[in-house]
Image (cartoon, rainbow, N blue to C red; front, side):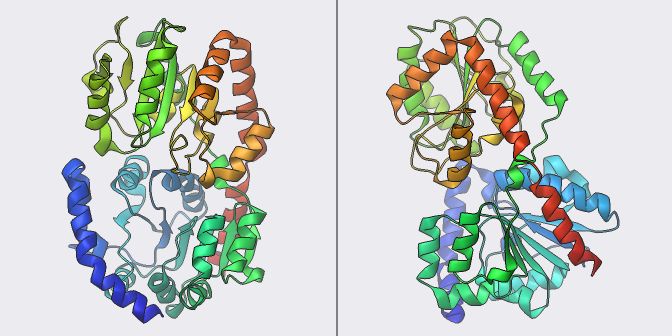
Length: 421
């Protein structure tokens, strides 16, 4: 089955390259360093690395504390972090800088995986969340590289999909040394698709182990004082296509009841910055881009954050935050950064990627879920009218994050045992 999979992968490579080229029209980084996606390197790299793979921004942010712990415990170790997206790549380079090696993960085709393995010769492979690549996993098995899936999560839908191709998935999972899942439900699903039950353990979600520096929070508070003075700031974070239009339309309505309302929008993907700006103009809304460094006027309607890596700081500048990807069927995004900063958190009905977190945060009265646009308006007005409720919600959210921390230490201890052997 794996040979058929590999053959099909080779056949679609031209279409993958065309897709990269298409995406690069709006986001040039997609066509940069494309050779890395085939493990065609123009320089030599250190070998015997500890290798972490994090798909994009969210996974990268979550894995940084673990990487730092490993570096502290093993100062002589060389760490490689691979990502798949340019935004993930940019975040690794911005945060970790020269303390790690970084390249894109190559496509899961045999010759690219072979070159990757020969170049870096990993002595430990650590994959974040749900990435199951048959050729990559088999290569680790053949080279006897301990392979860990950490912070592992698997939705019911993905589980059903993997169960349809057992001859491909089960041999891949047989190469895995250990699966550290976020929840017991995730553990059951990994076992159902072929993971060895003796090698699966629930250690929690490392995304709770977020540390927002006080300096970042202070910078956000200063933005509120200097730039957003006198405005009630509703920050809409990590928005997707067709989602901004919902809030831009709502803004017109809510503005009548909250005259000082300022909408701060942080699109998930940088290639969409200009598109969102255009939407604002079409709605005849006065928009200021963060990169323009223009001042916010009384008639400014929207502040568009067209930058990367500033979301935590901007959360600290907001009165209320809505975490996007959840008003459209995208599965939602991580609400824990906003919670850790201490801003009241709202999110929409589509939270399949964070189902367990959503359930628990609502049970702790630490966030508000809005099922539709009417609920968005109603809850925002309640938060506006009741400052004490905003404080309670924010305090509950911070407590919720703290109460669920500890997964990073557990995973680090598990990985440390492997490195000592």
